[in-house]
Amino acid sequence: MTDINEAKVQLIMELRRQGISDLSVLNATERVPRELFVPDRLRKHAYDNRALPIPLGQSISQPYVVAYMTQALKLNDRHKVLEIGTGSGYQAAILAKLCRRVYTIERHIDLLREAAKRFKLLDLHTIVIRHGDGSEGWIEHAPFDRILVTAAATNLPLNLAEQLGEGGIMLVPVGPEGGAQSIVRVSRAKDRFTTTEMLSVRFVPLVGPPKSEFS
Ligand code: SAH
Image 1 (cartoon, protein in one colour):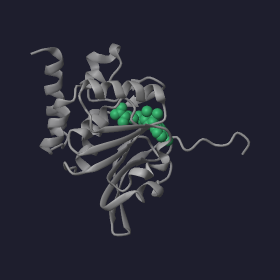
Image 2 (tube, helix red, strand yellow):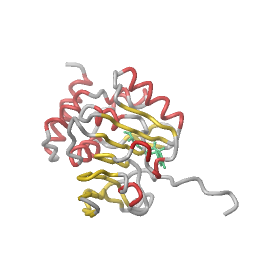
Image 3 (cartoon, protein in one colour):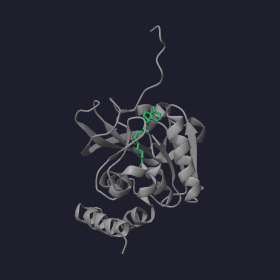
């Protein structure tokens, strides 16, 4: 077995030990080549269970956190999912294996271009990309069955939860930059939203809409 395959098998076993029990999530983790989403010099660490730096001061999340959030979304192949913060495209690729369509928004055009190349290379044609500020969601394609925010919001973004359909679930890391953040799950039933705090995490910040220079 090659080193990379061996490392991948080890990672899958570690994820199982850490409580990832959904076989479809473990399967998707096995099928998406994380080595293509990290910078070349870090390829040998692609299957380490940790976040890795990607260009522009951003990061590709830890495989455990990706698997945890994906599992918590309880996806099926009819779901339409919004992701905010495409980054490397890794999380979007995992989602694409498990749902009908992924809409993903990234504010850094260079990251988005690289991610788009990877989607093409991997034949992931159900991912729709957009360059821009995701903190407002993607109203033209709402409602979504699931929303996944992969950058930390300072406060719970209720405007995004409004773009959930009936029975929808949103996961969003909430907390200050570099401080104590946790993933919050927002579930929508009719017009009632229920929030539950889940895992402690550390994400790069969700950047809000550009502020006017003079305000
Ligand atoms: N999901 C990514 C990791 C995301 S890192 C992956 O699998 O690799 C968080 C990303 O969110 C960064 O790329 C950052 O540029 C982006 N981001 C932060 N604020 C944003 C905003 N308001 N709109 C769109 N993207 C944003």
